[in-house]
Image 1 (cartoon, rainbow, N blue to C red):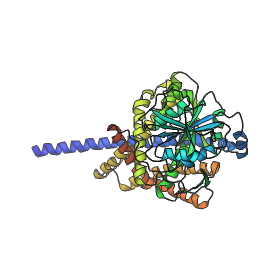
Image 2: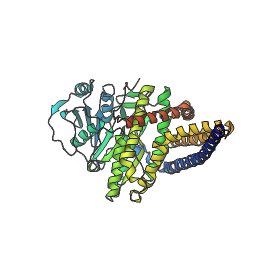
Image 3: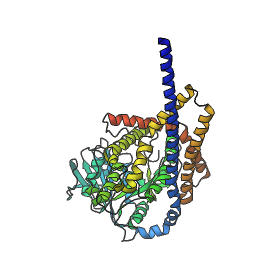
Image 4: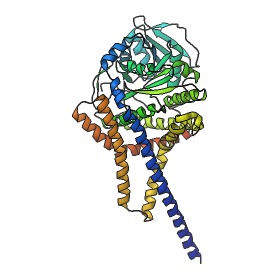
Length: 482
């Protein structure tokens, strides 16, 4: 009798498990179809706007506009922590911009290396006593340096307080109504600021933020802060990140910008209305993902106060940045991104989800981000366990799994190809046929291990969040030409 009852219990459990797995299969199929359709929906907007983008990429017009007095003055903020290897090239690239009126404010965030000394020695900077605003509370400022020979360059030395605190310190010292954030390991093209200002000038009252396009500088030749020879990265990890960035920025952000649903402006290069940033309290300190955080707060502020606004993206305003070329550094970066995304969704985004007053941002952007970005690792992990369950219970065969995987791979790969189409049609930054072949190859290789490792990194980031780990993580800089 006991054996009979045990068998009945086992059969009942297996029957329930089969029913659950069957239900899961329909849910997973719905999830995959929905995310694919949304990907293509956003990508469709990106393709639609390609031709207007091409019309805007006219260098003779850009050169004429660069010297125009109608361009709005901009304060460029460069937070720097242990950036001695890249800071001089970075600043030289900024001082060489084709732009009528702007200032460069480098904020040394208590660096432990020779960042401060290199800046002072290179530009012969001396201690001054400027009148700075106290609009946003920041850590202690130890000194401000300037040299009249470089009238638009300032160096702020402050106690270590993190990237957000450095940006807030730069905002307090800035003199113009537009601010731009630039990473210290990045280089702007000479007309990048002009191009991003052109987008702002299309509707200066409503455009509260504009993001620039970030490209990988690894393996390129840099002279005096200018990218002279564009090369596709030679190392594996930067090459994979190159095609990843191309898909994200050209295949995604153009489309999200078109529907005013952009959730992030890269900290490497973006322009903001200073008064709006101050109105939302500036950048939030101790917050991995401060670039997403500030954009979410700007959306909410404008929507709650019924202020007409636009958060835009300018794909032809190019910032070149160093991509991590080692597993350790890349994993640290992606774990931080995972922490930042989860923290932003829990503390900022969840209150706006599916509430009509937050319009596209609340009804589409945030649900999309939560379901298909934040929770994506859990769907992938549960999907892997479900496949194992189907196999053990003889609910499927490997041919069905292979076919489904190939269809999913093809749909994702076609989006990568679409981003490459935008790249070649509108920009053509990699004219060599060999580089194009490499981009095609790495677009495929992304799905063979790299994305799966990315899921693991994101899960680890979520664990770090639960442990209240808000550290920046490991980042090691190298010279641009290495």
